[in-house]
Length: 165
Image (cartoon, rainbow, N blue to C red):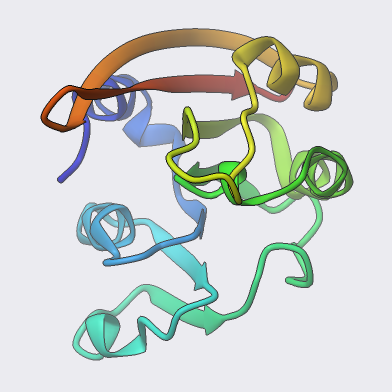
């Protein structure tokens, strides 16, 4: 399901979004939505999601991790990372941050959704940490929310939109 924060952002910026990289596409919800609205989407995930996109034009799926994926330079209008960064160690996020930033055109957007980790093998990246890691970008919007994932267990989610100037 698309979150409301993303939908509100997309309504304002849809005319400026033609080339998209969806990092950690999972079930392809965002890739399918953006493709159905005219964007060309490169979708990557470490899990094979190719069957989801068989009948979808405008989506190129690659089974690969963001740590090794060759991001086209100065190419994308929007890069999405949802529920990905908490799997990466801080030094790994730092390494990919420069590559992600260089993949954005001037005036383009980076949309990040991250959360408090649910397992010991996950990593916490607070919004301020991400602002520092993606310091070549301007933080345009930030929203925090709490979701109950199990009875009595809550997680904080952060939605951030950065702009490359």
